[in-house]
Image (cartoon, rainbow, N blue to C red; front, side, top):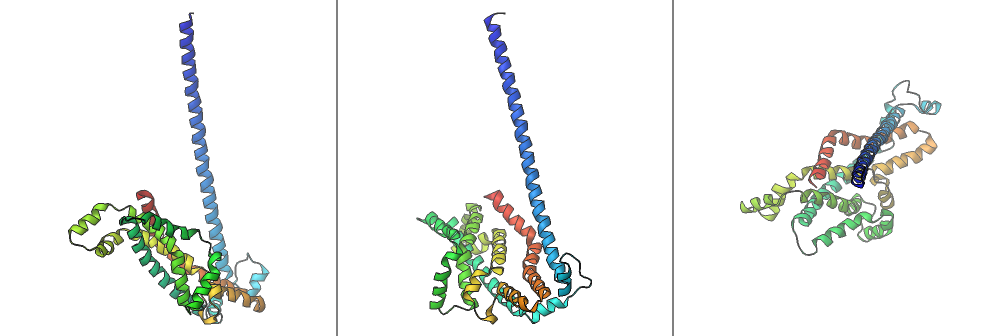
Length: 306
């Protein structure tokens, strides 16, 4: 066998070796991808099961008596004690705290939806000198810790005579959650084709009319997503309300639940405390269950179009 044949055999063997190596590598990568999916699903479903069990435990514990809670925290109630909710709603003034949180949340979320939509439309569709710099300036607000601005915010509200007021809380929440809202809405506006604005302008629509009648309805899924996330965040916000609200009548629901917890340390009314926790969580759970398809649809819209 001459040298030429040996060289050809060597090349064929090397080619086959590389082919087998790539097949083995592809099989290993495919196996690893499969394991990643399995691990991811296990973690997600584990978190879902844990959350459902925790919520279920809080709910049926809120229907126990105080004696049953101390007798066994995992035992089911012998009879449903719905008067725990009545006691929490009336004696613990949860009704007043609930209305305060509802007022602050509705006004703040509405203002955030309008302001962030207009700002995001200007940043995404109206190109001007410094527009990108302005966008990153808004975006930098997400990186500021709330604890860092507690004292300046308190002094600012004091100088404006808005400390210890629900209006003052609204003036805090709107700029605090505005960077996140602008960031999300800008991504939605950037997905829309430029031809829509040109067609509306040719029909004689003004700049504000293009935004209000053409562009805003198209990004409605984004508005819903931003509104829901802001609703959950503002409804459950505790630290800023604790610092700026001191009067009992102006407390929001998280402050009221904490006050109920402090009072139960002396009265041992833990059943009313769990009932108050359910009342705190119930609105956000109901909103999520009703609008979950819109949330998923809005996030998918941004992911597919972005």
